[in-house]
Image (cartoon, rainbow, N blue to C red):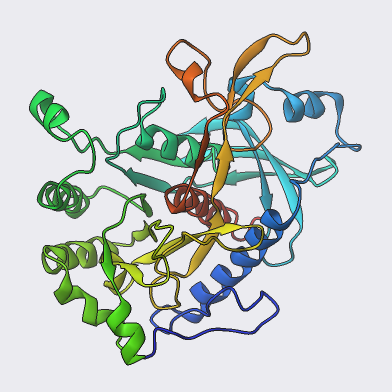
Length: 359
């Protein structure tokens, strides 16, 4: 299988076609979500005015308060590209009752959703108010506020936190995944795992030879042979693993994230202005199947009197993060990369799964 397959479909030749190691159903839905993401990054964000909403719904749809913004979301049905606004009415661990409105805010129906279980695996450190992992959790919860979300704490104990301020060493990362697999073996339910980190390897030899499959990479990476059976066990229990494709401004076209070589692991690359971002790695159909927006900026959210009440970083309406002395440093800072694209795709896909059969 060539890793250099390209498509010239209406999506645009910038997006690789999906590899055959995924089912036709997964490939179709992924392609539909890619088209939606491309459209969203080509122009300005859609601003909804809700002309048909009731006064009560309108108040909830336009509120800037955090308690309201985390109880609503906008979902595009990939089957027909129709837009719906979902409002949480009642929530329990195993079900969420929502009020569904159309693009203009008109009532469509009430529905009961079964929350997807999402695990966020992230070990980066950030000095800007929120850790990288907390940011990833924020993006998942804003794009799908109805899922059950758990963020794994990789650095356990004072010594690990002091010793490993940056990236978690591979042997500890392996250990954390093993611990998760053991919990799943005992009955823990996990539907999606979002991993916003990558280990890039040089793919220049493959490009020259024009044809190695993803399996050729497993032997090139230190502990990947140990990680593969753990990932395969996790996926055999029903979880889908999504990995950031990686960022590299100078060598993006020849670097590949090694864990994407494991069959079934799904790569998430990043888009800028409707095309693959110049620093998005692993850019071929074998390694990267999903693409989402990469660029975000933290901005103050002001109430109607002009008083700051929080911070928005996702670009969705409302407040994402509380404003305090610690988070204030985030304001006007740019965030982005495949690590941000990954939780966005996981959130969108999990919500689409939850909405299956509802409309």
